Image (tube, rainbow, N blue to C red; front, side, top):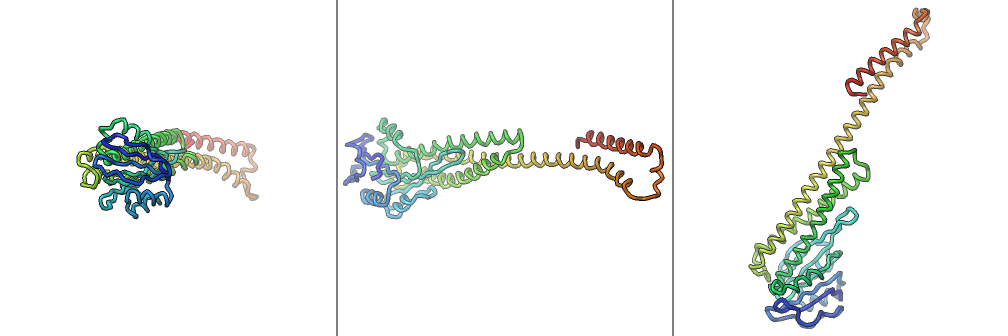
Length: 324
């Protein structure tokens, strides 16, 4: 079986040896102060069915945990809780998501991970080193796992914030390039998806911290409020970063419009200047016989002087007004 680690605990201390991989223990702990903690990674249907039989898991919850792609949620099946949480990780400028499902019973907690490299081994070792906390039971383990997932949101949102600041500075220096615009739109979409995932995650933590739920002791509820606060902070930061990206887009559009306006004014100014010699040359290019000034001795130089004088005056006026 896809068991990463599975152990029995009594009063916060490990009892017996870790369950061997590809082996499903036959008995479930029955003592009130004893529980099993089983971790599964990408199990197939047979492996999940064996685990469901071992812990009497509800078929609908098993189906959700097996197929993944769920938004965070909390469901009650008899005396068991089924919780789904999403993990997040920033890779190559994109936010990738995993999923972890939790089956919480009176004497067991089963975690099922899909597409997530956030293992629970370090957390398990940390809790095993503090039996007083682990002795609270499955509800405290659930809190610790959700707290770890919430903590791992912060490196993602911090990295996203660094990208936002870089794009903002790039916008102030010059217009965004095509590559930077693509990066901006991708990050904006990823932050929107992150917010869409965090909203139900807030609801899950709020229920765990305030409702009377199976296998959640009242004295453990305040711990879930701490997780709720972390999720809310990440959600507010995600919203802030999206607003900053919108501001970057607007600023980039304004800078580009200003640049195009400057180019348009320059083209218009040069067109006006060139219109003078073009008009005069066009007049004298007509084939009329009765044009007295053609017989004047200095008419050619007078026309060139008029053209040069008019173009110079126009150039100075346009330059003074900032068009050139």
